[in-house]
Image 1: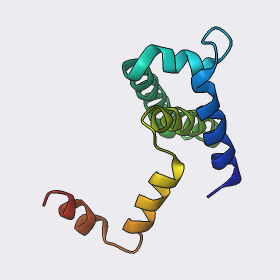
Image 2 (image 1 turned 60 degrees about the horizontal axis):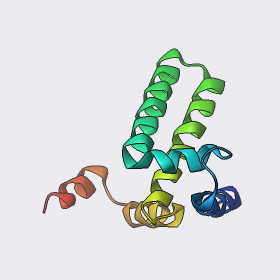
Image 3 (image 1 turned 90 degrees about the vertical axis):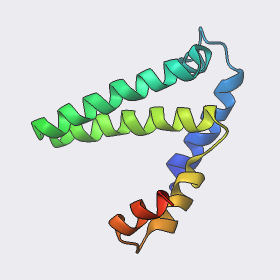
Length: 105
């Protein structure tokens, strides 16, 4: 896993105990699941808009925001980037159509 993801996961975990008035991440945790999900929705929309516009720098910026807020959700749920990477590893080499069909069983 990327060292950046590892380090970010540690910081996100630490922010659970931080004061929401002094930490953006702590303020997201204080808003609860609905607040975190709302932010992910906003970032996903901004990523789609950037992709449609074709501005590579903006695509990178918005995708970073989306990944960041998705990691906040993972931490909120007691998960981490390793859990997602493990799932991606499981899927690697499988046909996307076959993998999707296997979820419905």
